[in-house]
Image 1 (cartoon, one colour):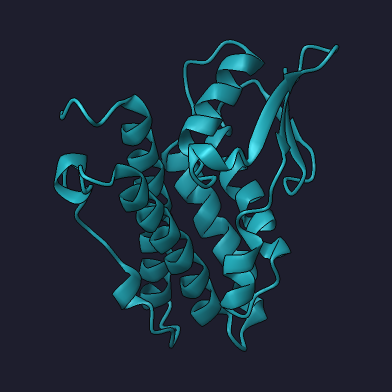
Image 2 (cartoon, one colour):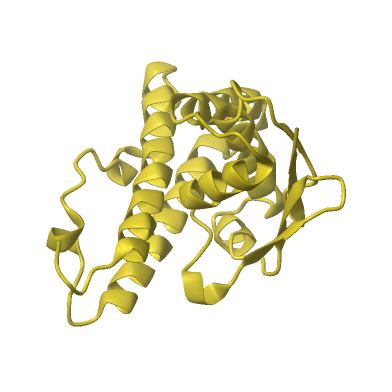
Length: 196
């Protein structure tokens, strides 16, 4: 790896790939179910090494554009699938939860470790956006507190309710934690609490 690309850049790229895998699963579901949703253009099957996709002369802008592109593709994919078909939402939630199950978090022993793994997985803007902070609660739980909503605007631009992002996020995170001892609570728009 290039000396210019540190671990945070690789983590960001992995988060983008994770969201793209969700997009791909939604597109596959749409095709399999015969939904007339024009989402094939949002599918990206191949993920080249980060060195091949990031402009080393402007790493930050390059990653920002990839984050923006992934968020836009996700919202627009859902916008096309759900347009005039709100009855599809339950199936969409199942697809997204299954994506979480496929990427499930394993081998974590504490809420702190679980929190770290979760934040390593979720695409929540760029690190400089500081969209969330974590705190340890007196009961031993760890809380991710959202300090900025970076997602609703993408959904609203795609004709969706911005809160839908957090409803689907909850499904994804529940899938990620399906085989752990940890409980999840919170409303996911403002916070996620991880406890034993």
